[in-house]
Image (cartoon, rainbow, N blue to C red; front, side, top):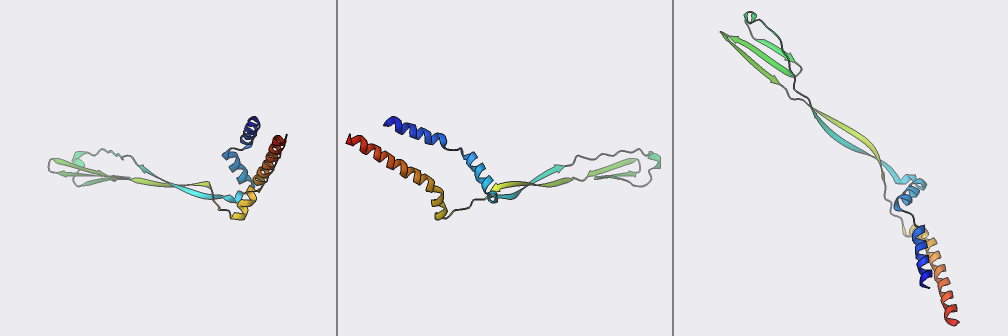
Length: 143
C-alpha cells in the first residue's frame, strides 16, 4: 500500500514541468501577455582638456594677443618688460541618453470561472484516483 502511494507521488512529481517551461508554453500560446517597454540609461562623458601652442616674437608683441581653440582661451599681454599669460579651459560634459527596448510580462488576474476551468482536469484526476483508492480499500477490507 505504501509503495503504491510512494510510486504515485513520484509519478506526479516527475510529470510536473519546471516554471520556465510553463512560462515558455504560456507565452507561446498567449503572446498578448508580453508587453514592450523601454529602459533608459543616462551616461555622462567628460571631455579631456584642450591644449594649444604657438610661437610669437617678443619684439612684435606690442598689444594683447588672444589665442582660442575649441574650449581653450589664452591671453598674452606685454606690459613693459613683463609678459603676462592667462589661460582658461572651459569644462565640457556630454550627456548621452540611450533607450533600450525590452519585453516584460503583463500580469492579468483571471476570474473565478477561468481559475476553475484551468483546475478542472486536476480535480477530475483527483476524484477518479480517490474513487479507485476507496474501491481498492473496500475490496481489501472485505476479503
